[in-house]
Image 1: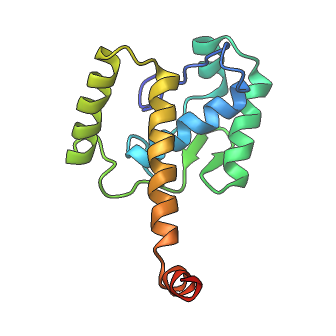
Image 2 (image 1 turned 30 degrees about the vertical axis):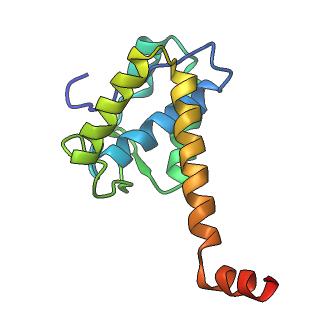
Image 3 (image 1 turned 180 degrees about the vertical axis):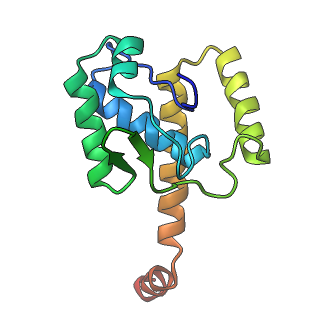
Length: 147
């Protein structure tokens, strides 16, 4: 797959449809900066050969991403990234990424599995978002009025 910068991996036991896994993996690569505007996605034939999923599944994922404005299908040429989702700090070489990689290694060493780690990160994000949301000026004023 010369020139392709993403290899899809399908987890048949996850309960997540294969086309959704392709979309999520593409979005993750766009957020991490692994995929950039102008990069070519693997052809449906290449994805089928690598994952043993139905070609229509791949085409559905690519259509969904095209409708979302992430990729563009160019007849006879392939599917190309048209929009980035990358944010500063998410790149492969960022300090945040290195810290998270170290933390993940410690979590794995402590015996946590993928689902455990995802649950921890989700809980931490939820706590952070809830605290941040409840500390907006309007919320503080309402709390003071209630006191």
